[in-house]
Length: 138
Image (cartoon, rainbow, N blue to C red; front, side, top):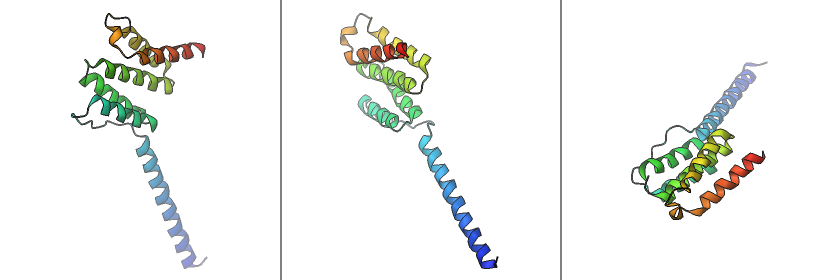
């Protein structure tokens, strides 16, 4: 081969290498679920929205961090707490971490046995019961 052909092949290989490295970095970055900086001024609704967006992108670690922020920052907001607990348990279910999911759903359902249960949003009880029954069938 001539020098020019070797140089062209070398150049093409370098470009391919750069493309592969770039694709890998983008892939790893999109799958990352490292710590998220969560602004202190976000409302429970904003935290739920961001958690759902992260979950839809399969960024489950980030989604859980948003839901955990609800539990830490708004422990007296029963609707938001139920939402967060349900979503965390459901993420565990999607990840096939069935023991953790079951524990989360059962803890959520225990809230509906407490004296103020009529104040809780009913949809999370229904959803948790449905997923648990599905898990029992599998």
